Length: 174
Image 1 (cartoon, rainbow, N blue to C red):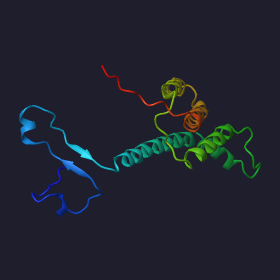
Image 2 (image 1 turned 90 degrees about the horizontal axis):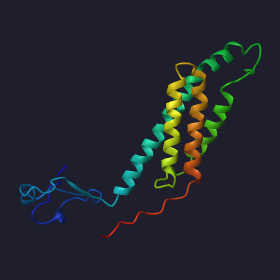
Image 3 (image 1 turned 180 degrees about the vertical axis):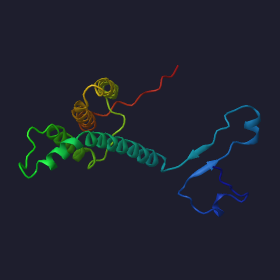
Image 4 (image 1 turned 30 degrees about the horizontal axis):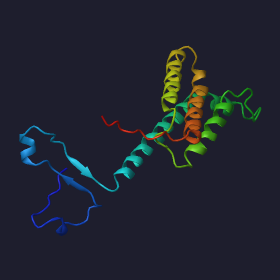
């Protein structure tokens, strides 16, 4: 996206949220320098955090839907036997439902995701190992997916709520 700036300066242009988009000069393009577009905005950090929040919440929504779809048979059995007993005994979805609701209450009410947290590599490894276990055991027994999704919710919640910020990286000057 290129913004045309007339010869008399940017004062004659309407304010577009203080975003300035500039194209590379023809001399830099001919000399083989970087010809990428430069975008400068005072809201750039806000837009990045909004996009990060969208990705984070959409991922949690997909996890929530996976946990819900797996427990649909429990709801059908409970609805079928409701006139005989109002409780489903034993209820395999109860514990994972309580964990997911508690974690979602914390994550979807706070200002999350928090970025640049310590030990994010450890959480990434745990979630990756959990996904490998889910893929390995799902063809054999589908009932293990619900608790595994609840564990994933729990891991993400504990990391987002209690993990401290990582120290900023310092650039080495050689």
